[in-house]
Length: 155
Image (cartoon, rainbow, N blue to C red; front, side, top):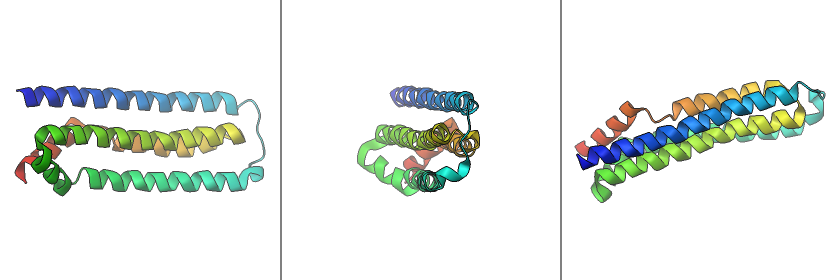
């Protein structure tokens, strides 16, 4: 029963932090919308900046997808279960989820920064949308966590 209580507490913490990250992303959309409507600068003036930020967002996005696949893989969770037990797997799930959530939020923030610098809301739509999709992809779904713990127990 103690293991279940530990799982519930850690999962609730991960959901709460992830909800805060999603809320922060939505607030970033609002701020970008309000500030980018005041004045617009021609897009051509910021070509190098836009390419650099879009490239960074691409690298971070691919990194989030690959890191999630690696961190929640059955083999990795099995090795953690052997070394640290189920509590160690739960802690790993929490840390991995938070790391992935923060990296996903970084994509949203890149969109906000670019939108504020160029005063073009379209940049926020693109990068913010990608970041929000990544936040949903890395959300700590209870079924994913249960499946991870079951995989760790089997190995």
